[in-house]
Image (cartoon, rainbow, N blue to C red; front, side):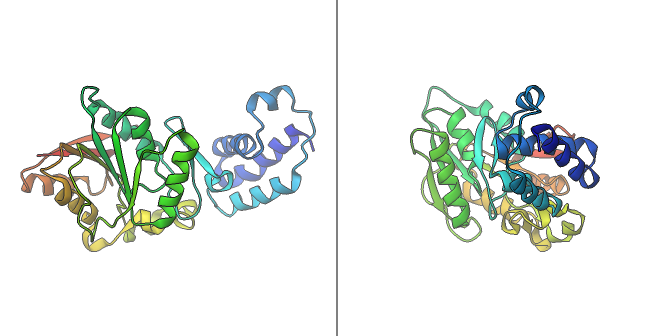
Length: 277
């Protein structure tokens, strides 16, 4: 089998399930991220032999079972950082990267800022904050030991120093550790269990439900707990939102006398909020 044949086989296997465009993109990314075969190498040296047929078959089998590509390759790119992911850790989303565009407008080079990332997961937000707020103190918390371990490993792989404080913490039960950060960023679980039936299998069957879902009885519970923990003490909180409940959160903040600014993502959905006293 040649490199070109490996790509063609991958594309033909994936396209019936994922569609032509996504199947083509997934095949290229599989070869690049799992086998180090770049698009340029494929174009120039497509006739070179491909010697990992068995591993390719195994990867395609996993993709055809709806397993996320990022769990197979072991990473996802996030704002120029290579973020390791695996079962038990949510895969970073492009929408979350958009949220960071808003957060970075708060950078103040004239003071040492303290930032907290609540529900850090893979650590992608905390690491992006470390990259884009040089010299700031970063605290990252999560209830999951698995997520915290991977987040710590991601810091080691992306930076020459270890400066982020990773702390096991349950924002729903525990009081905040100590002191008030200047900025809080939080991408909490926000999908109601009743929405699960409409979700894609590669998310529902593989990604951690602990990081995805919240009880239907109070879909704003994480937002309420974070707001209670940090306002009015901190300058502002940035949240990623469920567009379905953004209006409810806005009303909740208004009733507390808090201000809430909203922003849409690239798809036009109300996805982000900045809340402050």
